[in-house]
Length: 267
Length: 366
View 1 (cartoon, rainbow over the protein chains, first blue to last red):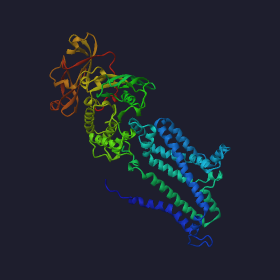
View 2: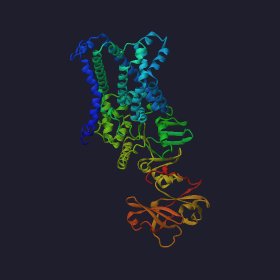
View 3: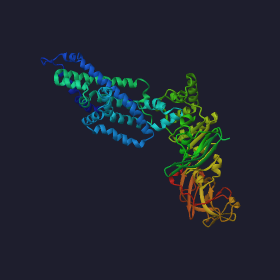
View 4: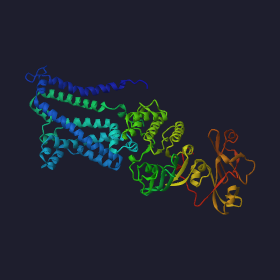
């Protein structure tokens, strides 16, 4: 293979433009967050210290993060076998599911949450009153399009039929085939869906607010309304934490197996 | 006793009859090729044997046991697919090992078997490579080793060479045969390539529109095709329509002397079959007559040692293979005499109209 330059020179101006677009707001927020809440002057880390020593910060962060993990786990358990089965046995159903997956995009969150709240009113407390029940359920719906389209792309990139039949002819049941053959080959897609889900849940405000749960975005909003400069610090911290979470997910997802799993078969 | 039996298999897809009463008996250790144009039902038959599809009617019997309704993972059949069937997340060795792991074989035995099999298919050094690091031919070798690893009762191959280069194809088909003979494994091989089928099989079954047109040894299929379709499909054949007359056949008012016509009733409509290599071609001097047909060379196709001539004249349309050296003297436009040998031609009774074989149903390269 001939050596390739890492970046083509013609791409540099665009890359620079993109970097400016993303970095300027971050740098501005950073400078803002370093100002003293009392005097409004630079530079102090007091705002960061305030955030870190705030109990609600850690509490809501934990709730949102666990909610995100729960949503990811439920979504994967629900959608991976479903999409596998649809690709394998019911390909005619795929457009129907793709259409259903668009609904959370089209229906405004406010309509969705009001509908859900009404529908589940009177359901047991462990579900209705706890974020792990009602909110996680709503988030699975919200994450459905992201999970579906990521996984669907993953399933399309492999020859589901041939791989399944090859595995079956070697004696495997379909569950074994799913776990040992299919899953490792759609891992990249499952990871992508999981990232998107994590990002959505960590930043979801409307549903949590209307359903009166105190999640991390609700806390950010509260700080934003009541405190000036610490809100900047909080924003940057949450940004960093979300990125760190994604990175760790990537590392966990990539740890086992080899590059063969990420690179699709030679076609 | 037959080891693998397909009994009266029927399978419809909507209004299309994919299989219309397939009967096959195959002895243990024998190699049968199902040969036919695309859409003839050969792959459907194979998939039913593998258990990926169920017949509407009929049975699949292996070693006396009816397996028609046994699920594919319990049939002990090794299958090699057209392409892309290796598990991309596993190395070649892990692919081969997969079936043994499912069977919970002990690790050292597994290792040994994987090494032996990779050695057998000539990939002793490639065990650690992932499928995307292997060429198409190597991938199919691994797929073969993987199918053999579970010591299947029947080996099924579904056009395993069709995605490969011509040269690799020839090399690999010979190796498949070598390994099959070495292990003595009963094998069902699906292909649309007649050369491939004739070169490796004990028996060839030519399929057309869901039926078996003819089944026999490669030599029988080539020298004595039983139906007009088989005559057309296997090798290249001149087909001349005619009626049996005393001592020969009347072909469009021309009386051909054909030895095989002797024992047929007069007036029977027949098809005279002549292989291109049996047609004698010389430069024309005269108007022909008898078994000599006169026409012009309209095309020359170079095939290596021989060159194929298409000769067209008044009521004449034949192809003839002549030694390439000789063909140099017969360029396009030359008026030639093509002689049909009296005892090198075969006759088939023409019961109905000649089947019109669509272009795409014929093997490639014709």
